[in-house]
Amino acid sequence: MLVIAAQLFHGSGIAGTDTLEGIHQGLATTLDGHAALAFAIALLASGFASSSVGTYAGQVVMQGFINRTIPLTVRRLLTMAPAMVILLIGADPTTALVWSQVMLSFGVPFALVPLIWLTRRRDVLGEHVNHPVTTAVAVVVAALIIALNVFLVAQTFG
Image (cartoon, rainbow, N blue to C red; front, top):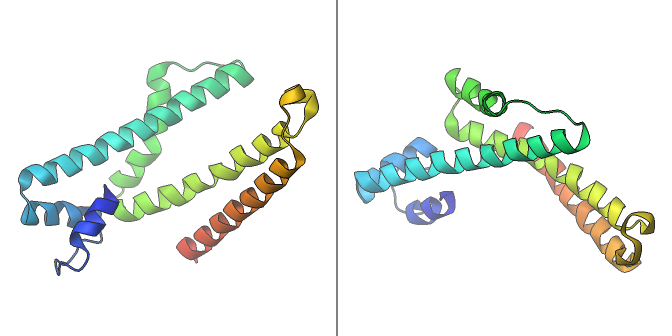
């Protein structure tokens, strides 16, 4: 959605389209109120979908690895609470969106490193173990991704 908005407004001369509010207003001005409403609903739906996936992933991890369960309503509240607090204290939604994506990038190494480590172990995967070349390429790609994440954090907070 944001890429489409960037394409639509790049070079258009419409000021303020570098924020979520500006995109919403720009859509209302350029197209109509229905387009602006569709953008707002789609953005909200994508946030809910993302939170749902995070909630479900957390549930699977808790049930599978530490044998704990939390009631569904409590899980949803715990998942949504940080985002709601940030918006309720008056943080700029666009900045909050960027920072949330930067923070989510921290999760990538926590998935990649164990994945590479486990897929190279014959005692875990048996005959399906990765070839050493595959593991070497995966290590290089993971190192590149981790380096890019460090750069992203430095650029965002530096």
